[in-house]
Image 1 (cartoon, rainbow, N blue to C red):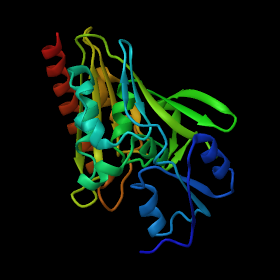
Image 2 (image 1 turned 45 degrees about the vertical axis):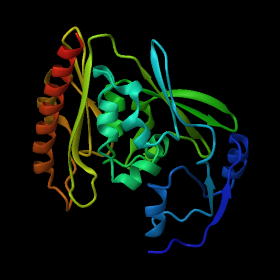
Image 3 (image 1 turned 180 degrees about the horizontal axis):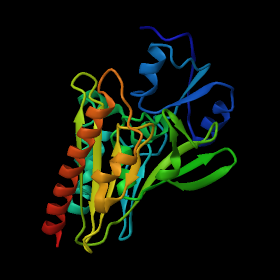
Length: 268
């Protein structure tokens, strides 16, 4: 497949990117692993592609109370980071290591994936379970919003035109917590038919989020997340009927909760 003709601009700064993105139908390009495939099948036909991939939005910064991940940090960087080698944050590298293939993990970025908002994307469930926020910038200013406020529907977010995700901020879970991510993927695409993230807290409570089963990732009642699936409008498609996807979701929820609980015990 060949994309429709499109102009290209490599941004040298955020201000330069905002100026270019002011053009109607302009789209930002980070790692290209989400935008380019839909351009190739002409589901997206931007007039201008604004490449932000070389802006200084990479890397992880860890303090006592939060983890800040630059929007252009790749999946491979997350999977390999020693800063995430703790039971409480284990879901992050566990999820990142299973996304796509080697090429996708080396080029795909966390910010680009979140902005794309594919309902089968893995990482949103992890970030929901960890109560993360995204930091954004636009030509008119900056703001922070909870990841739960970001996703509106399939491939749709609450980002304004020309607004870019600049970082993801994860509050540090308390000492003794454990987290996990488990998914059943389609063997050809690698996207989640059902994925679940769990955060097991020292007080015994559990926070659970799921992806791949509905129009957007969502948080379920951690005390009885499997039963809560009965109230979810689960999607059915040619890859998995709704009933099968619901059963898969129950399986990955149980596995994620069990694994997070084991890690909580190891961290105590």
